Length: 371
Ligand code: ZN
Image (cartoon, rainbow, N blue to C red; front, side):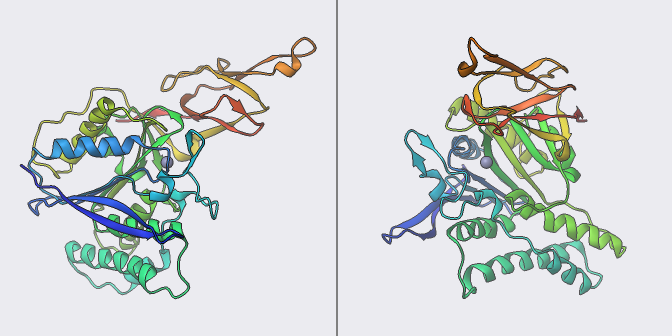
């Protein structure tokens, strides 16, 4: 039986003095495999990841665990509680307007400096020193910054500090109304085949403030800079954003499937010592980030979303139709929307009522089979 430890991390304070806290669950492995950090619910309405963490803990209880695993549900206590009427908002910090998943930290110059001062050392030593640098840098920002931090930065940096201490990072999100999909750094493409997720977006080495990028970009950059110096380096750190379906919903049965899919990846990475988990025999499609396109509504109106997720929508086939009752009788009440090339729709906007310019769908505009 695996022991699960719980601690409560203080993330900040509200105006009344009430503490913002998150629960942190940790499992000590045998010290043999890579360590893992998994968080969920950074965006307030994206709640399925909490159910997946529940199912992961239930399954991990009975599994032989080699590497240390840290799991953080409700990672963003402000976002999770940010309700308006019956809806959860929680995508943007209500004070600054910044997306909660764009506040992590990355310092490219520091990596160049690190590599410049590196002597020829075994990789294990390089890894340890570089990890210390990343963790130390975040600690510095959290604890020794006399001008302070925004509420969002304080939350993000505390999560990032935990994530930097792991070899593998999974940030559990959902789309608005969405099929499952995976954001995967291009170099880790082989790992995408171990998740039971049919659609993978391959992301380049660029930092835009998200958790996955904040934890893989430094290592990717390190490996590239070492290569230019002729130092052999095996890039083993991986981070993914796992999009688990639609917001505002949990489904514990689906969460168990999602947990098994994650355990299939962790088994492949030798974090758990078992052969119980077999990735599904499904066709997986990839799409480069530049080809993962948002389609913005050409008009305001009421949208009837027609295209199915995950299946090829042929050129000219309708993506959606938009109802405009103000035009009924003296104009066109129905407008069909299509594209001039084949796409795979992945997600759509959560509401039927849209303004001109609303992000209606996100689609793979170019795609290929992942092998
Ligand atoms: Zn999200």
